[in-house]
Length: 87
Image (tube, rainbow, N blue to C red; front, top):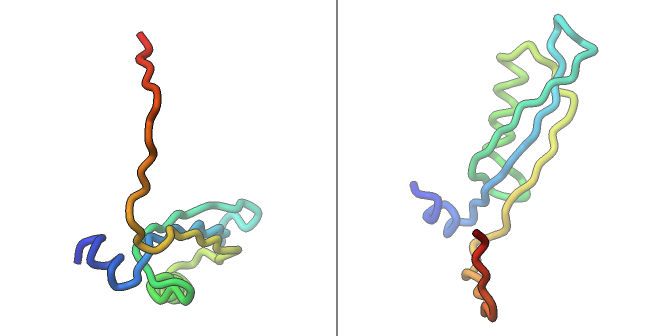
């Protein structure tokens, strides 16, 4: 499916920042960024990814920060009154 098809079905572009610890370096906090289309507010795609992580990856998740784009809306237009070119 294309991004527009997903947006029309209610999907939004979601970005998750996952902070985690590796077993060898428990004091070092590392970051992984995941970006995909998902359904807010439950985020089933993210939940599947995190379940996979917990089961197959040794790194321990510290926290997950989620942000997502709004739903599909008409484009916004602004009237420009002045244009300047820099050389």
